[in-house]
Each structure stands twice: as C-alpha cells, then as structure tokens.
Image 1: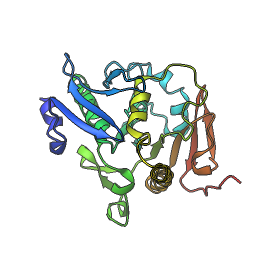
Image 2: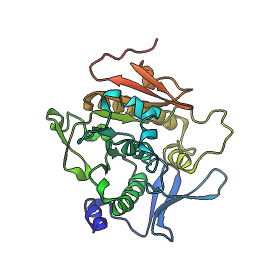
Image 3: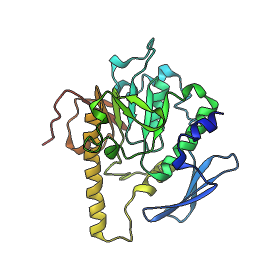
Image 4: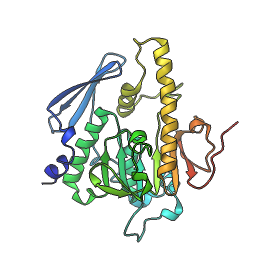
Length: 288
C-alpha cells in the first residue's frame, strides 16, 4: 500500500527495469539487483565495473542512538534553540544539495523533518527507490522525509514564482510546506582529494562521476563549466539565505576555505569537516 501511495506521487519519474542515462562523459546504467534495489553501474578510472545503491534502512546514521546523533557537529550546527526533546513539531530543514541523502538521514535521526532537493536524474531515481523502501518499512517517516526532484536555485526563484511571498511553498510530495527554519548546503569541494591516500568510497566516486568535467571537451568548455559551478554555488547560497527563517549551514572540508569567501558567523569543526553557520539577519562579510 505504501509503495503504491508513494510511487504515485512521482508519475514523471517511474522506474524501468533497465534505464541508460548519459551524464558528463561517462555512461551510467540503472538496473535492479537480486533484492529489487535500484542500483547504478559505471566504469571507474581503471575501467572496472562499479555498482552502488542507496540503502537508508541499513544506514548507521538512521540506526544510531539519537542522543549520540544530537551531539554530532552537524546537529550542533543546527542550533541549541532547536533542541527537539518534548517538541511536537520539529523544525523543517531543506537540504538543497541532496547528493545521496546521507546527511538528510542523519538530520532525520536527530528529529528534524527534512526535504531532500536533488536535480541530477540518476541520483533522483536512486533516492526515490531508497525512500520507497524506507517508507514501506517505517511508514511513520512518510511525513518526515521526502524528495523534491528539482533544481532548487530555479524552483525557488522569486522572479519566476511568487510562492516565497507567503510562509508556505509547494515542494515535492508534501503539497505545501512551511519555509524551512534551516537550509543545509553541501556543495562539491573545489579541491577534491588532493594528496589523499585512502580508497575513495563508492558514493564519492559516483558523485564525482556525475559531476566531473568532460576530458574530451575543449579547455575552454571545461573552464566555462568550472565558472558555471562557481556561479551555481553563488545562486545556491543566495537561495539558501533567502529561504531560511533562521540560519544556513554549509558543510566544508577542514582544508577548504569558506564557500565563496563568505566569513561564517559560527563554525563547528569535526575530524575532517566543519559546518559553517550563517544567520538570517546578520550581514555576511567577505574574506580579504
């Protein structure tokens, strides 16, 4: 019942048994494995076949003790005033750079209600399939996490839509949702794995495969793509600042500078990453 209910919410994204999509210069193939989980396959830089599927049910973040999750740097960056104990209506968090939805699931386990935004067609189908399985197993989470398969910088553009003039916006399967208390961003890093010796995880490989420049394209085209990426980050940050009611949280590597050179109002550091916090009603200064 829940499978049919949720799947019908995305008539334009119905899944086939095998779907081929071309992203960047790599050919990725979507197919179902023996357990009927949608997986994506691609050839890595050593010409080996690699497969990956998203599984929120087996996620250690979803099954982690909520008290441990709330002491993590990510949840601390969400703010002390947003403590969830005893609250009937937890705050809304919009993840505008969904990726595989890993951090969204961590926020869900912390008690937040989350809407994942993702524009890449391959990732959208993988997330949709993972959410179907999650909602079938745990139907109480249907109203707490969902997918909005759009480019958030265009979907929330006030010049194209007047929905931002009210306190509600239409997003994905949730009909109309309140504007988020917090907007979360995890943009692609400009310096990816420089000097890294450890093996890159499959999810990271997938994200790089879907977003890396085309080696067969001209230098000018790749430079233009890089400029477009910087432009998209700028639009993402502007959209996040405009949407949030309270704060924007940006995930960055400890080795990377703040996004777009914008000095954060607070910064919560972890072992390898930090979370830069920008408050809604404070001016953001640029680093010199």
